[in-house]
Picture: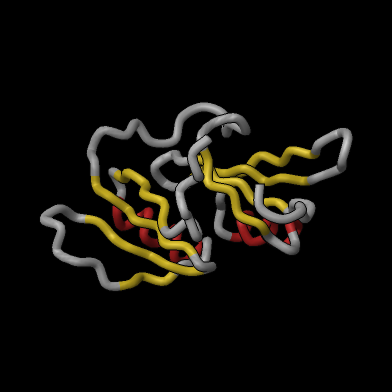
Length: 133
């Protein structure tokens, strides 16, 4: 058996966007990221950082935008929070449509929502796990 890659941490998540300014405002004003310098990559985009993670917004032009129901099984970015109810109230203040899921067996409350381009985001207060997998 070969050794696993020596990964230390997740550095960034890239999100394609058709709505750069709306995405920048969403990740900054709703989720609390701050914009950081970005090299000249010869295409529009933005880099934002907080919580030990960077979000790289990359202009694309091919995304359909938010459509249909908010999905709980779609590709998504999930954030650990201490107070799910407080996050839900803040999302309401920002006018962000959301879907609440409460797991029947554990009572875990999750809130799912989308960024301006339709990418799904989840927040929850997940139980602690033991060491590395």
